[in-house]
Image 1 (cartoon, helix red, strand yellow):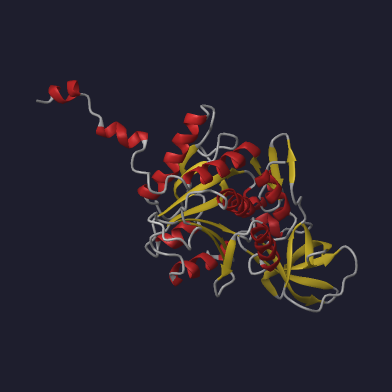
Image 2 (cartoon, rainbow, N blue to C red):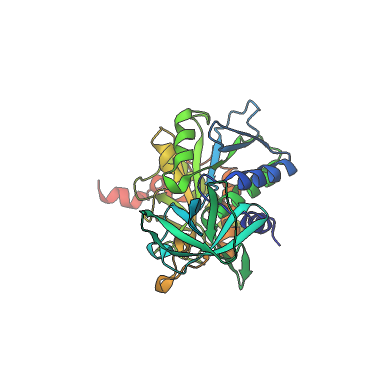
Length: 360
C-alpha cells in the first residue's frame, strides 16, 4: 500500500472526537518520531511539527494545517439504566434519530456497541443512549462515535468514519516524511489542531498566539463537501476560499506552480480549483490574524457522515484524489519562493505587438 494510504489507515483505526484527541495525538506523534521529525505542543495540545526550521534559511516558511477531530458525541452521565450523550460538532440532524448506531470508546482498545433512543426529556440538547450489552461506566466524559468502518479501500474509493480530517493529517505526515531527508532546507511546519469541528478552537488559539512565524504561508488541508467544480475523482482542489473568506493569491500561486510542474511531468495529472463555500476552514482562522493563507481539499462524499435518504454513512474520497493531493502538497514545498511566475501570470506579461498596435 502506498505510504500515505498506510498512514491514513492507521489513523482511521483511532476514534477522533472534539476535545478527545489524546489518542489521535499520541499516534501522530509516534509516526513523527519514527521518521525523526521534530515536534512539540502548544498550551492547547495542538501539535507543531517542523522540518528545517532550525536552519538560517532565506526561504519563507510554509505550514500545512489539518485537524485531528471529527463530529461525534461524548457520554456525560447515566440516566437510569441508560446513558446521556452530548453531540459535538456538525452532526447531521438525522444523526440524532432513534436507532442510530454508536460505539462508546472508554479506552483505545474497547468499543461498546450502542444506539440512540431519542432526545433526553430533561435536556433536549442531549440524547439518551442504550448499550447493546450491560456496561458500567463511572468516569465521564467518554467519547462516542458513529458505528462505521475505520478504513476501507475498494475499487479506488476510500471509505472511513472520519476522512474529515484524518485525510489532511495523513497527507501532512506523509509530506513531512518525504521532505525530512531532502537536501534543500525549505522550512516546513506540519500543524495538527484540536476542536476544529466545534468552532476552529485549536486553530484560532494557535493563530492568535503567534507561535507560528507571521512570515509563514499557511495551507489548510481538508476533506470537504463535493460540489460543482470540486468533484470526486477529478483531482484535489486548490481552495480559493471558504464560506467566510477568500484566501491569498500569493499563497495560492505556490499550489498553482506545483500543479503546473506536476502537469509537465504527467499530462494526465488532475487538479481542480474552486471556492468551496460549504463551510469554514482553518485557513480563515490564520487569515484573521494576518497570515497569508490558501487551502487544498479532497472532494468528499457523505460529508460529516450524512448520506442519502437520511442515513448515517461512512465518508468517502477517491484514492487518486488523495494520492495526487499529497503529491501536490509535497511539490508545493519546492515553490515557496518561486510562485510569482505561473503560466497564467505570464500570459498577462506577454502581449502580442499586433494587438498593441491596434490601439495606437
